[in-house]
Amino acid sequence: MPTYFIGDVHGCRRTLEALLKRLRPKAGDSVVFMGDLVDRGPDSKGVVDIAWQLQASGIQTVCLRGNHEQMILDALEDRYCRENWLELNGGPQTLESFGVSKPEDIPQKYMEFFQAMPLWYETEGYLCVHAGVNFYFPDPLEDTISLLWARRWYGDINYEWLGNRILLHGHTPMPLETIEQQLQRLDQQRYLNLDNGCVYAPTHGDKGLGHLLAFQADTRQLHVQPFVG
Ligand SMILES: [Mn+2]
Image (cartoon, rainbow, N blue to C red):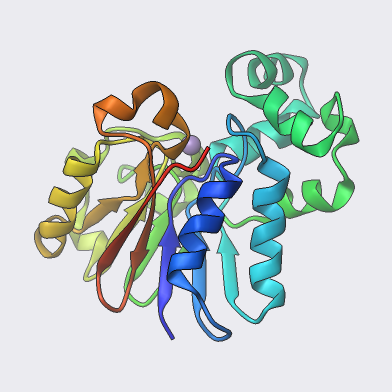
């Protein structure tokens, strides 16, 4: 019953399909998405639909909320957030995947899904967050802004609080080489980034980015799927 943790998909539906074709998860297995399923890439709707198909086929599927799902929710509430999402954060591609021109027209069941996404998830000794953790909070999992947005927190890790858990996260694209080094030092450092910037393959492929990653809990194997355009 393997558990697979999948990094930031960002609408790269074809790449996700290629990765799942290799992993072949079965009923009873678990798939955990690290957030940012949507925005920037060509088919955000299709990525959410795949997550729903996995769940429907008996695979326990968890989709963490990333800052990009949060931005869609916020776009409905606030004009500044809406402009920010549309101008800087790949919102138009997401709207296009739904065949709509404004966030109000995204079907309600998708918005309810984004709203219901958990901000963290713990399983088999792995604590999963989208972005990071604010270790200066009395309860680090209560700083929801950091769970969605934090960067550069490795130096702040409170190992006493973390205990024997390993922190998995996404959000900050890092070169594959860096991520493979983290994997080698997993027992000492106890963190692993699963965001290799899949969606940036066309623009930053030469900088070590551009793969969709899946980390398999039982074997500690890193599955590396190159971007499929
Ligand atoms: Mn993010």
